[in-house]
Each structure stands twice: as C-alpha cells, then as structure tokens.
Length: 138
Image 1: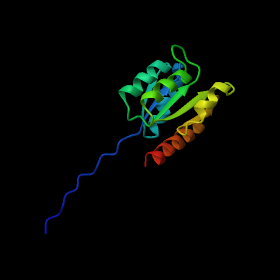
Image 2: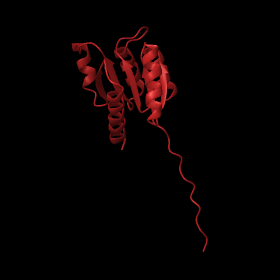
Image 3: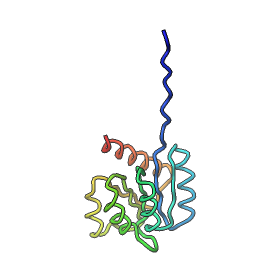
C-alpha cells in the first residue's frame, strides 16, 4: 500500500495597510501588528494607502487615520471603496464623529476606533476586524 504524500498548504498571512501621517504610529503599529502574525504595509497619507490597496487587492484590513495630508481618511475610503469592496476599513480619529462620517459608518465593512488608544486595544480591534472580514468572506 502506497502512502499518499500531502504537501501542506502554506498559510497566508492576512495583509493590513496602516495609514497614518505620524511616523511613530506607523512604526509602532507595524512592529506590534507584525508580531500578531499579519503582514503590515504602511502609508503616510490616504493617497499612498489607496495606491497600496490597488497594488495589494488581497488586503483584508485598511486602517485609515481620518486626518492626514494629501488625501484624508474619508477621501481615501471613498477612493478605495469604488474599486475594492472587500477589505474591512478601520477609521481612526481623535475627533468627534461628524455628520459627514455617518454615511461611511453605514458600510457593514467599516468600524471606528478612537484615539488615543492603548496597544492592547489596537490589537483587539484589529483581531476583531480581521474576524469580521473573514466571516463576511465566507
């Protein structure tokens, strides 16, 4: 009797795009989230984030600071969502939610996260967003 050799399927790390205009937040976020077993790509503004999503359409999660130069998080959301309906989008803000954000928050693939936050809270929110993304993908 011959044994069937099965090659294990390599696991694919979820891809996260982290956009924030503060270099320290990008650096710390990338380091912390990479330790959680995800691939983290960073962007300094919404335009860079949108371009990264175009280059990595398999991204499961896009974290967008709402206040960034060149292209805001709100503008980046609209730009990304036109071409990529699947990624979960986590909007991050240290400001009050405006009336203009209400239509974005109706998107079932969007959640809001308030600054300032603790690293443990960021990890928890990211893990929840990835779980929500997986549940909607199945």
